[in-house]
Length: 466
Image 1 (cartoon, rainbow, N blue to C red):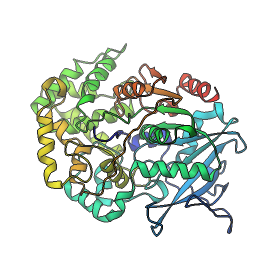
Image 2 (tube, rainbow, N blue to C red; image 1 turned 180 degrees about the horizontal axis):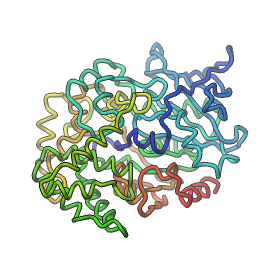
Image 3 (cartoon, rainbow, N blue to C red; image 1 turned 120 degrees about the horizontal axis):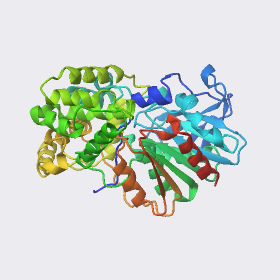
Image 4 (cartoon, rainbow, N blue to C red; image 1 turned 90 degrees about the vertical axis):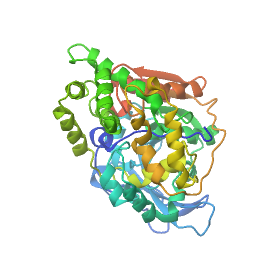
């Protein structure tokens, strides 16, 4: 890869089922006259949060420039929440997923995972730029994709979003968020802190640790997205779908009617255009029900035999729980960040639009049937992220080089049945962080700390207190 970037497939389903679905704003300005400048950023200070559901916490607001290179650039206000022990000597930055999820409004659910450290740490959450209280809102794209990453958008919706955001969309790369985190650290007057990320939060956490290694005491990566070796066709993950579906059906008492991987391959062979939708739907099932995958294996088996009724019901179910407003999961920031961060077969964000389809077609044509199984070339070529960024108008790109995590004290947590961020990604990240520890939870799904696994929480507590 020319650049070291990746994505994750987090969804609002995770926000609603695991992290809570409140869309209330969490910012709280301090008393007049208390604002200070911190490295070009404004910091309100902390005071009690004004929202009743957040009354147990302190809130503040970090003001940063949209474009740090331009002192005349407009500013962004990023709500910040502090929990745990406000007087603690240790601090942990907690980063949520997406790109697109908010931070502070999820605190009542997220922070339950950290009872073991709440007396020893200040725990900090924020709305990353373009999310939450001030989310980038692209109505057409939001309506089409809601809380999903893999749903295929229309060209019209993608272009409308780009037009709505205009030239500002250049300033929502992960590089910009990493700089915001460093401004926040300085505002809080913290010399070093632990950084804990879930899903896309693991990607931003690694990017921060690579850029500011001396500031990070502990790095926790839960449902990991690697910063290296991403392929936008996603074919490297296809084998994980076969493994996980078979693992689910091999569980005691499951009694699936056939081989779900073979059934998936049969359905895709019969109707190649269904590949991208099946990728989306099976991924969503991994979020919703990693232990059983609802009735997905049964629906695939029936469809392989010619009866698509249950599969259509599954599609409708996923569509119904995927709706989400931008404040819960912003598709505007999804497009702005991923299309800047990722490398595609056509290159980066500055690639001419008219060259993209041809280069993508050529790259996918080189994939072998064994690389694509149990999906197909249509799935690799037309997955939602590939299509969205193919349509996204070119924008000035910023290359990032030399992302080394050597020497970082890291703990990786991953669910064996997670397809939102497949296990192979955690294994790649583990190899890229010498000396890191990888804990794989059998039968586990996405976002292990929040989902409540007691042994996982104890492992994290011991790591952070060590």
